[in-house]
Image (cartoon, rainbow, N blue to C red):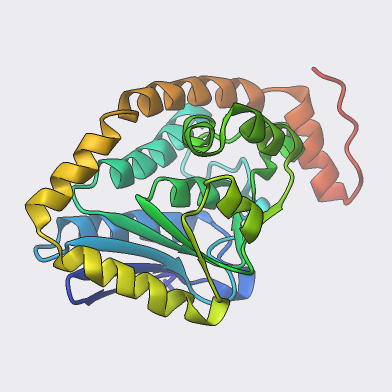
Length: 259
């Protein structure tokens, strides 16, 4: 199987990269499996003091590969599939080491939610991010309703989730969804510099700082993900979602009836 995810260690930093650049790192099931394994291995490796998440090529990730949207080739239920995705994001939030996300190009849907689970997000000035699930009759389901609301506020999160609108890097920074902007050609160096700095900091104190802040909202995130799971499973069964998938296959505009 192709290396759809790359991993390396640099001065205490585990760097895990999406590696499907020809598709802007669109998330198919094979990549998702490799990503979860790589992240788990990185967090379990002695000497890892910071985790850096990034994407090869022009984008962090364009989100779910629409060719596989709703497919369950291994026979999972919708609930099992979404729960596994939520567990992967919660593992980032619960990680004992700091997690940095370097975002450029597209950061869409579930990939955007994964970045929101990082402790710090650096963004290139070409970043474009969105939650487009509404176009498929769905909602974000791996923490956006809690994390984006905590960072950007309720009304801005509703705007993103209910419209699927794409925002640029400057807007994402102003809304608190990313923490720093850098030129696209400096993103990798800036992200690695920050991650290396965090890796060199006193590890016990860094873990304590991360834990103290996360305790203020982790319980709400876990409860919010449960609500997202319930909502998404129900939405997968709607006629509107079926119509969205049919319209995509048939290359036409969908007609939603609210059923």
